Length: 108
Ligand SMILES: [Zn+2]
Figure 1: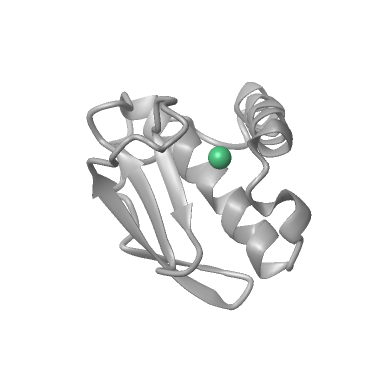
Figure 2: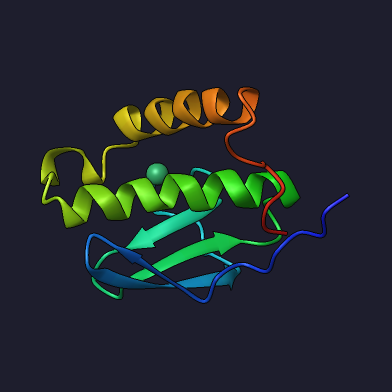
């Protein structure tokens, strides 16, 4: 079995460089459980390492990348809209994983 790669320290999304941070994220004001966060102002993709198991880390990075991509594409109407982005990224992710196009344990 292939050994998982380490998370990249930075990723470029549409010409914008985001730092990738694995740590603890304070819960949002809405009170929901926050597993990841895309901070477009700070250019950071944050993943909560205590709330995510090894496979979730990969999906959460993919999901936060979608936020960053919508920001880079200046789709302000959806860039912070999880009612759109969550199912979009989940369904897209499930297809990629089920077809072996992406390894859900790439990063751990
Ligand atoms: Zn989101």
